[in-house]
Amino acid sequence: MSSILSYVQPTANSPWGTYLSQVDRVIPYLGDLARWAETLKRPKRALIVDVPIEMDDGSIAHFEGYRVQHNLSRGPGKGGVRFHPDVTLEEVMALSAWMTVKTAAVNLPYGGAKGGIRVDPKKLSLKELEKVTRRYTSEIGIIIGPHSDIPAPDVNTNAQIMAWMMDTYSMNVGGTATGVVTGKPLHLGGSLGRVKATGRGVFVTGREAARRLGLDLRGARVAVQGFGNVGSVAAELFAEAGAKIVAVQDHTGTIVNENGLDLAGLVPASRTDGGAVSFKGGDVIDNEAFWEVACDILIPAALEGQITAERAQKTKARLVLEGANGPTVPTADDILAERGVLVVPDVICNAGGVTVSYFEWVQDFSSFFWDEDEINVRLDRIMMNALNNIWDTADKHKITLRTATYAVACERILMARQERGLYP
Ligand code: GLU
Image 1 (cartoon, helix red, strand yellow):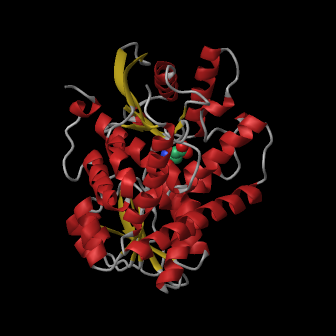
Image 2 (cartoon, protein in one colour; image 1 turned 180 degrees about the vertical axis):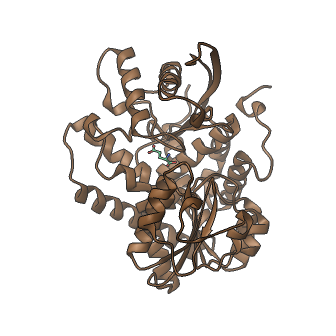
Image 3 (cartoon, helix red, strand yellow; image 1 turned 30 degrees about the horizontal axis):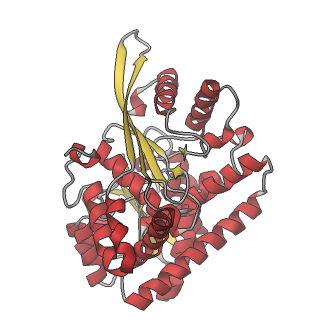
């Protein structure tokens, strides 16, 4: 019998393999709801689309696009769209599943979804990027919508791309539908605070975890992998709180300064073609040496599978804050737990982005927009409540914060599943 699952070959440390092992670990804590657990191991719906465009030189190029709706039990699908040359169906399945867990962990009325295009956007002109975005949006238009599935930015996508998606969908339905995507520009129904929300959530959950560990943020040494929207904003907030950013790794390499990198110089340098290593206020070291840097807090804020078993053995950090989705493989998770390194898992740590996406969607529907203070106060409250609840669950069962987050989230998802019942 064929199923969506037959199209992917996960391995123990691949994204879907990692996700499956995370689900297996929570099953003993689900009680009678475990009966429904298989639901979590199967995406509800996966769409693969061809995205052909005419390139600037007149040639025709084809890209492969995906939109996976992992689970819609608690509400419409929600999750970003990633443009990356290595995107695969398997990866998008895992990312969509992590969205299901994430929205439930912070109790937003959403399911989980994710999309992606297998393309290197750095190799496209602006016009080609717009064409790819519009054709992809039109192709997945049969399953997205303000009440069914709401895309948002993710790796290599931004407010401009969301504006093109919103416009394309709106043209096809014959009316402006701002609520179909979040992370839009401010004057097109975007929300204040959305751009910084993910990094802010990493900081808020990290600050609370540090407090509980007795780790003073003043003088704490922080190493950040990935210096995009998530890593750089989190770094700035930690620096404002008195921490020293001692190491940063981006796609150009690794730069260190044990006295703290000056972010006022590093952030603009990292936005140029030369990347983080073009900044003169630190020493460039080998990429693998990043994982051994003397630090208290490690923030993986790039792609999946970065913290391997070997790197988990090496890290000097006491606290890992998962800004990225799926950065730690299951064997590394076990090693970190054995070594007493506390991990605040992705599905709570980086939930700030989707939380402010939810605020944006609510504001679009009510056509009433909040000020930035209100956004940030609400964001902080939701993140803190979710984290405290998860911490209590972890203490009660003596389990990791990751398994505790899955316990809280999966109970909500499967309870909704059970109460809705099977149709027909
Ligand atoms: N891409 C972000 C994430 O992984 C945000 C998704 C959203 O806002 O829907 O959580």
